[in-house]
Image (cartoon, rainbow over the protein chains, first blue to last red):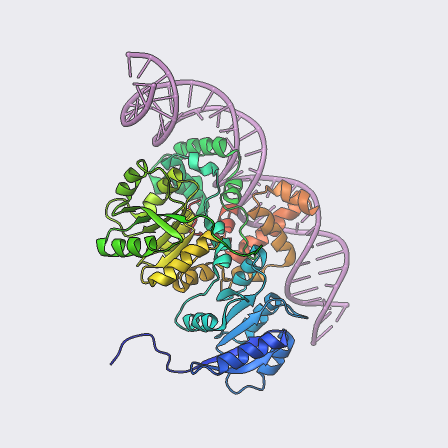
Length: 221
Length: 221
DNA sequence: GGCGCTATCGCATAAAGATGTTAGGCTTAT
DNA sequence: ATAAGCCTAACATCTTTATGCGATAGCGCC
C-alpha cells in the first residue's frame, strides 16, 4: 500500500469569472484534467448562486474572480461560504492590492492568485488546496509579510523584560492584582512598572497600551 | 527598448544551512546560475555572522535554515537583519508549524519555503523576491489564511449596533468620556451600554473586552 | 394596547487604575 | 568606583471604571 498524496475523488470545481474568454479557457482546461470536474461556470456571483440549486453535487472548490459586475467577488464571498460551508474559495484577481487581499482573507478565502497565473501552474495550485495548502502569489504574499513584519521603529523595543511581562499581563486582560499574582510581585511593584511603561510608550491607560500594541487590526471587529 | 522584468545585477546570495550536503547542493546549484552569486555559505548562524566581515560585497538575499545548531534561524533573524538592513531573508525549513512561521514573519522574513522545494523552483522563488514578491509554500500560507479567517462563531455577533460603537471605542483605547464625546452621548449612557455589553460577553472590564475581542494574536506586542 | 428590546440619562458607591514621590539592592558598563 | 539602568516596594491622592437601581421614550409586533 502506497502512502502519499492521492486524490481518490476528483475535485468538484465551480468558477465565477465575468470575461467569457477567460472563463471558457479555465473551464475547458480544468475540466479536461483527470483531477477536476467543473460543474458550474458563471459570469457573475448572482448567476453562480442561482445555479447552485440545480446541482446534484456541489462544488468543493470555487475559483472566483474579484472584479465582477454586480456583487464583487469579495462581497459575495461571505454568502458563498454560507451556501457552501464545506467548499474552499480561491480568489483569482488582477488586483493584488493589500486592501483586497486582506479583505478576501478575512472573508475566508483559502488563497489568492494573480489572474496571470498560467493554467498548468493554476492546476498545481488547485491541487495544493486539496492537499491542505493555501496558494498565494508572491506579490500577494508580500502584503502578508509586511503585515507581520515588525514596525521599523517599534516603541516596545525599549521595554525591559520585566516590563514586557507586565504588558503581556495587560494584554491578557488581567487586573494589576492578577498580574502581581502571576508574576509573584506586590501590587505596588506592578504599578511601578506600569508607570515606567506608560512613560516609555507615551500613554496613560491600559486601554491605550492594548490599542497601541496592536494598531487596530484589519479584523472585522 | 524593451520594458520588462530584468535583473541588471546578479543577486548576491548568502546561505545558512547546517547540513553540509544540502548546503553544498544549494550553493553549487545557485552559484552556477547566471542570476546569482553565492558569496557566503555557513553551517551556523554564528559562522555566517562572523564571515560577513570579510566580504567586500554583502549579500542582498540570505537563504536561512531554521533548525540550526546553536542560534536558531529565527533567533538569529533579528541580528541578521540588523547587520544587513538592506538584505532580504528567506527562510527555508522542514518545519511549517504556525508557531515558527509567524515568528519568522514577525522577525521580518520575506518569505518561508519548505526545504523540500526543488532547486529549480527555489531559484524561481528567489527571483520573485528580487521582483518584489514573497514566496511562501502553500502549506505555510495556510497558516496565514487561518490567521485572517473570521472566527466561526463570534460572541460579538449578539451586540446591537450601538453596543458595537461602544466596543469600537474601547478597542481604540478611549476612556468612557472620550467615547461619549465621539458618539455624542452622556457619560452615563456609555456606562449603561457597557454594562449591557459586559453582561452579554460575560466579562467585567475594558481590558477583558479587548483581550476577548482579539484572542491574543501571535504578535509579540 | 401591552410586551420586549433598544437607546438614552441620572445618581450613588465601591473597586480598580493612574500618577507623584521616594528608596534600597543589584547588575553592568565606563 | 561611580554612574546608569533595572527590579523591587511603599504611601498618598485623584481619576476612571464597574455595578446596582431607577427612569423615560421610541419601535416593532401580535
